[in-house]
Image: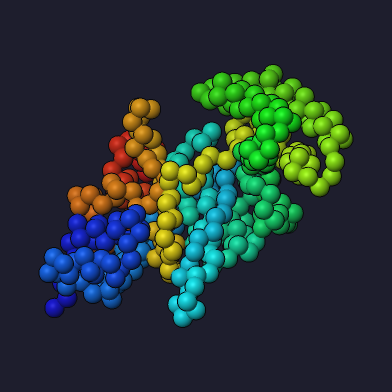
Length: 351
C-alpha cells in the first residue's frame, strides 16, 4: 500500500529545497535525526509530482503574461551541477515580467534553460509581438527584426549603470553629471506614478521629452570631446547607440522608463541547482499587492511561504498520479487560493 505525504510534509520539503536551498540528501539526514526514514528517491518523487501538479498554473500564468502589450525580459546565469565532471556548468534563468503601468495581474515567470541562446527567448515568446523592455544583450536582437517583430524598449536602468560604475571606479565628474540628468528623468516618473495613462503621457510630453532632448545634446557634445577606448567613451556610446529605444517610453503614457527589479530581494540563488523540468515548473509566481499599499503581500520569489499553508493545499491536487484537465478559470482560482492573497487582481479574471 502506497502512503502519500500530507500537505504539511510536502510544504516542508519544497520550502527547504527551493527557498532554503537544502539538497535532498540534507533533508534525508535531517529526517533521520528525528528517526524518520525519508529516502532521497522518495523525496525526489514528491518534488517531481509537485512540479507536474503546478505545470497547469505555469501554463496559465504564461497565457496571462503574453496578453500584455509590454513585457520586461532579462536573464541571469546560475551554476548547474554537472555530475561526473567534478565541476559546475553555466545555465540561465530567463525572467519575463508584466508591466506595472498597465492593468492586470503582476506576473513574473522564470524560465530555466541550459544556455543563453537567442532561441530560448524566441521559443518562449513565439508569435507575441509588442513592446519588449530589454538590455543590449544580442540574444534579443532577432526579435526586433523578424517577420513579426517586437518593438524594442531601451532600459534606462542599464544605461544609468554604465555611468554609475564609471563614477564608482574613478569619481568621474562627467559620469556624475550624467547620473544627475538621468535622475531628473526618474524624478519625472515619480511625479507621474499615480497618474492615469493619459495624464502621464501629457506629463512626459511637457517634461520628459525636453529633458531627453537636452540630455541627447549633452551626450553628443561630451562624446565629441572624449577620447576613444576608455570607460567614458564606452558609457557614452552605449547610451547613444540605444537612443531610439531609450526615448520610446516618453512617447506614451504606459511604457516603463526602465526595468523593474526582478532579482534583488526576490529570487535567491545561493547554491547550485540541478537541471530538471521541476526547476522550470517551480520558478513561476504571480505577485500582487494587497489593496492597502502599506501591506505588500506579494513577493517576487518562489516558493511563496503562503503557498505552503496546509489549508490552501489539497493532497489530490499535488500528488495526483494523472493530471486531470482543469478549466482555465479554475486554475486561476486555485492559484489565488494557494497564494492566499485577498482580493487578488487575478481573481477578477475569473468573472
